[in-house]
Image (cartoon, rainbow, N blue to C red; front, side, top):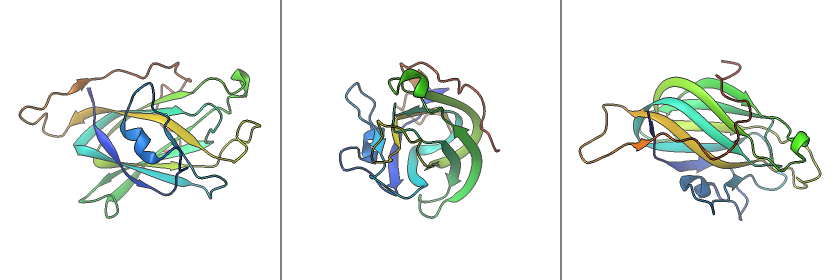
Length: 178
């Protein structure tokens, strides 16, 4: 299992200071994606894998106070994100984070087994709290793990799978709502 490369193919909206393209890069300076202020829900973020892949695990690192109540996952196959055929994988729920006073980020790791070229995240409404005055949701980082269909092409080396440097928020299972 290797880390799969992807780029953001679509976003239904974004805060100007936290664009979806922030999810393309993992670094200590990455700020992640945030929805527009006072937006309609759900918000959609679409990822295009660099090649069709067998996905084994999706890791999502949530913002510490701009927390979605639920994120639905879909896998897509086809020539482009806009014309892909989608299959709903299920959803994951996030904690409201009140126990940490909105200081800790929650990492959700979801184990799946599917093949596709695209991943759609439908990000549902936020938990209301005093640190989220604009009713936004945010994803700090996404990590996709699996294998490219047909294995690595000549000269391509898979990046070993490594989880984010965060505490797992108890999401080490499968998806809900199948």
